[in-house]
Every structure is written in C-alpha cells, then in structure tokens.
Length: 341
Image (cartoon, rainbow, N blue to C red; front, side, top):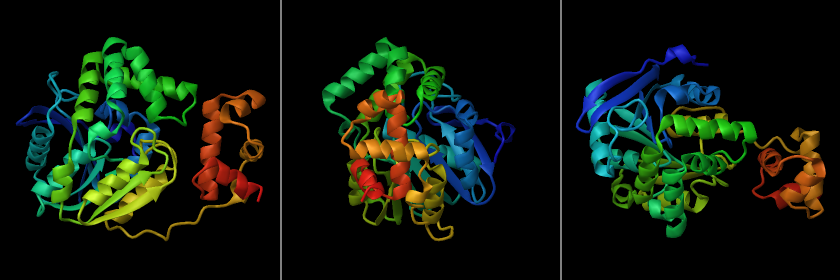
C-alpha cells in the first residue's frame, strides 16, 4: 500500500488561480476529483483512502487536485461555477502535459468529469462516474438544502456532525467524530457553506447529454448522500452508459467494500480482472450478525435491537449492512429471510 510519504503535493497556476495537485502510481493518467471538503494532505493521511487509491495506482498514475479556494489550493473566495472549474481542470492537464486521460468523477466531481469528457472527446478516452448526480437540486428538498447550508454557516460543529451521519453512516461514534473534525480542518464554516451551496447549484444535464465516449456509472444501492435513483438518472442521461449497482450505504468509495469499488472501476477503465465473486453466503456471517438477523426476523427495529443488545443503532445498522453484502440481498428483511428461510 502507498505510504504517506509517497505523496508529493505540487502547485500550478491556472485560469482560476493556484491549484494544488499530486500524482502517485505509474501507468496512463487517471484524473480523480470531487470529494466533499477535499484536502490532499488530510485525505492522504487516512489509511482507508490510501488503500483504495493504491489499488488504482497499481495500474495508473493517479492525479488528484484541490479546487481553487479549497484544501491546499490558493484563494478563499466563492467556489468556481461548473464551466470555470472545467477550464481550471483543463489548465491542470495542460500544465502536466497530459494528452490522453481517463477520468473518475465522484460525487459532485461527476459534473466536472462529464464536462471534460464532452468538451475534450479526443483527449478523454474513458469515463467512470461514481456516486454521481445530474442536478444538485435533486439531492434534497429545497427547505432541507437551505437548512443544511444555514446550519453549516452558523454552527459548523453541528453541521459537520450532521454531514458525518450522511457521509459515513456505517461508522461508529469515534469514526464519525474523526470525520466531523476532518471537515472542520479542511474548510472554514464560510467555505464549507459556500461549497455545499455550490454543490446544490450544480447542473450537469447538458454535459451528460453531450458525452459520446462509453461511460460506466457506479452507484451503491443504499448511498445516503446521493440516493440510488440519482445514479440511475445519470446513466439514463448518457448516450452510451453502462450502469453497475454496488451493495453498501457509504458514499465514499474507500469505505465499506472498497476493494469491490476499485475493482469495478478498473474493469470500467479497461483492465481485466478475475470474474466477480458471488456473495460468500450465510456461512460467512459472524455470530453477532446471525444474532441480529434473528432479531430482525422477529420484527424488531434497529433501535429495539440496539437496546436489547446494549449497542448503538449505528452499530446494528452496520452489522445488518455487512450481512446483506455477504448474502447478496438488498434489504434487511431479505437478509433475515435468507438466514431463516
């Protein structure tokens, strides 16, 4: 696995200002962007993040960057509009001398990735979108969007904790606290509020319709941050799309079954891998997972099970999600039925 010291952050000047970037691995270029509160250095300190990137870096030179005004990039003004960020990213590729590139557009980064693929069809030869959406307004009702932005702007501590519940739902309390802290270290309250407002304002519908290269859309079935139907919507808007449904609820690909996400990404990028394994089945369940599914079969809710076992509801939810993955089913009821047919 790549080590912390394997990353070197450099800077280039673009039409939108100073941009911090890093390149790790070897092989053809793979551009990745789009994380919430992106920070090249802080993200890289996370072993889960490095593990996920390491699998891609075995076959690609993985290029990441912080958008102007975010992370290690210069500037602190309002986030760039979509067309401006596409121009900035094009400048970055020019500065690095990258003539041909594959792109992995994740989450809000899917909009920029689609824009680049649409505008540079001879330069972008493969496109993968993970956890992406076409319009930010579809992420939540208007009142909920406004309330979240206002909470972040006025109480970043509370806002970061609320976002942790959305982005890392399977994490325990300590992990959610660490992610909330990461967000606060990555951006000020004003930067975070503006960034989220800009995400809600994204509209990539025209860019998606203009993409002519084959594109693979990956989406986890129970993603809480970007609901599954929005991934299907992205695929429908692309003229040449392949949609791959993945199990799991975590939005970030380096959480949950990160190896499966990385492998599907590599397949989409043209790297043959061994055939997909079928779910391991009931024999792979842990005693705790079996105990919880037995209680599910009795009609108990996650909260009731948590009280019965003296665990947190989040822990119960995580155990059920893991069991569903092992059983290859989509719902808690189906998991219980598979264990108690």
